Image 1 (cartoon, rainbow, N blue to C red):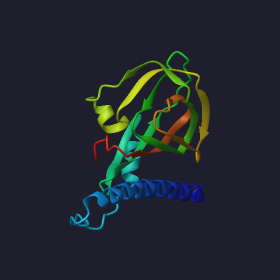
Image 2: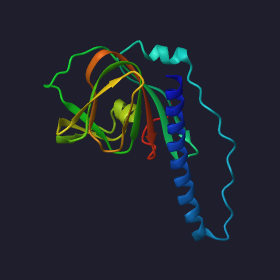
Image 3: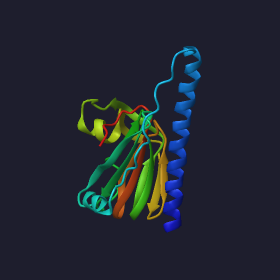
Image 4: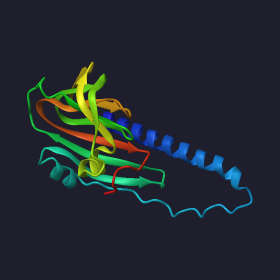
Length: 196
């Protein structure tokens, strides 16, 4: 389990560095147009972000998708760490409303528990989420919701990883066979989410 957690962190680090490199490369490409102008001053070295076990355990006490931290990475994109705590619940085919996020990609690492996500397909009669809602500003970013169809059911257990790219419909709360705690890592290149 320890090796898997290190692998996940390495993957998140690699993805965040790739996004940062891409943003820097785009910025440098634009500098050719500004030849002769002085380059902006380099910022001070970034500090790290620490989320204590106690902070995570506090978030595990109530159901929901709770932001632990959302940080600005080199003024290029936001990187968020969330704790998704889910109590056991049976699958309910009547409630198939899922989301598709326009700006964010997600990596889910199952710390404990088991259940099933619905992923893929399409949303019937999709509706844009209210951009002024607290959930959009702090958890989902600009998204649309709707009844899922043509999806796949992805079962999960502790130690599994699920990656959801931008605009892929999904429903992480479809079935929870054993109470689950899931680390949700969000890559937000449009910086749509509020920093925490």
